[in-house]
Image (cartoon, rainbow, N blue to C red; front, side):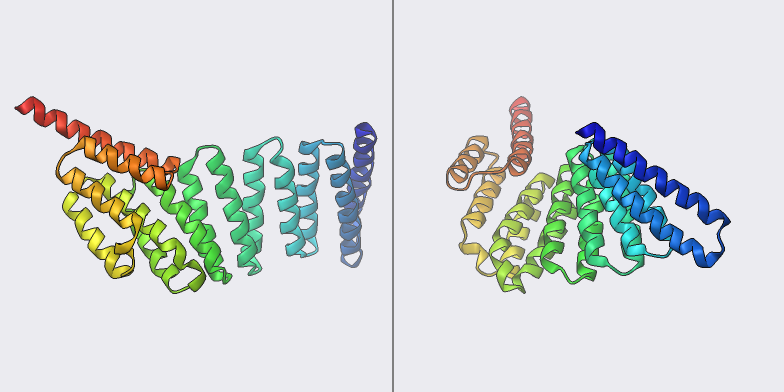
Length: 295
C-alpha cells in the first residue's frame, strides 16, 4: 500500500512540474492560474508521500508548495506549507524541521500573525531543547514570549519566559534568571488566574540567588520578595529559602542537606532545582574543607 501511495505522490509531482514549466512561457494572466493548479497537485503529492511515510519527499514537496504559493502572493498558505514540511521533517531531521519552522515564522511575522509566529518559535525552542542546545532554545523561547505579548497571549508569554529563566540558570546566567523570575512574579500578581504560581517563581529566583554565592544578597532578596508579595513570607517556599540561607551563613552542610530533604518529602524537587541545589551544596562543602585545611 505504501508503494502505491509513493507512486501516486510522484505522479502528482510530475503534473505539478509540468504546470510550473508552462508558467515560464505563459502570459502573466495565465501564469497565476497555472501556479494555482500546480499548488493543488503539489498538495496532493505531499499528502500521498505522507501516507507512504516518505517523510523526506513529503517535506521537500511541501517546500515546493510554499514557494508556489508565494508566486501568487498567498503568504499565509505559504507559511502553512512550511509548517507542514517541518512536521514531516520532524520524523527524520530535526535540523530540517527547524529550518522550515524558521521560514514559516518569518512569513507569519511579515503578515502580522504574531500569535501563530509565537507558537512556532516555541516549537523551535522545544526542538533545540530536545537537542540539548540550551543557548538556541533560550533564544527562541525569548522570541516566542515577545511575539505572544504582541499577539495578546500574556499567559503563554509567561510560560515561555519561565523556560528562558530555566535555560539561563542552566547556562549559569543567574542574574538574568533572577530578573526574569521577579518580572513574571510581578506580572502574575496582576492576573488572578496566575497568582498561584508566584511562590514557585520566587522559589526559583531564590535558588538562583543561592547559586551566586553572596549570602548578604540572598537575605536582601528574601526581603525584596516579601515586598513583591507580602503573602510569600507565610509560605513553605519562603521558609525553605530562609533555612537554606541560614545553613549557608552558618556554613553547616549537614543542616543544608537536612533542610533540602525535609522540603523534598513535602514538595518533591524537580531535576532543575535538585541540580542547582547540588551546586550550592558542593560550593558549601568546598568552603568547609578549605577552612578545615586552614585550621
